[in-house]
Amino acid sequence: MQVVSELVEIKNNGQPTTEYIEKELTKLNINPLRWAVVFVSDKILKVSVANFKE
Image (cartoon, rainbow, N blue to C red; front, side, top):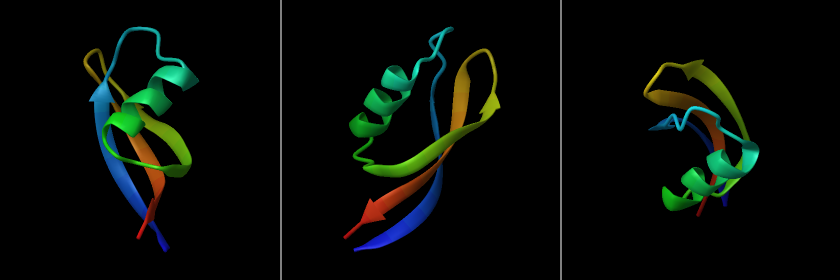
């Protein structure tokens, strides 16, 4: 298993919570070791993710 850094986009729901972001990452089949929001617009959030890959 290795850790891969990725930049993903998810829909901005207006008031994103930790639970919302982690749920959206799970929908993208991402098992995050860590994540951080790095960009915010009215429509999207860009999230930097350290993802476990097999």
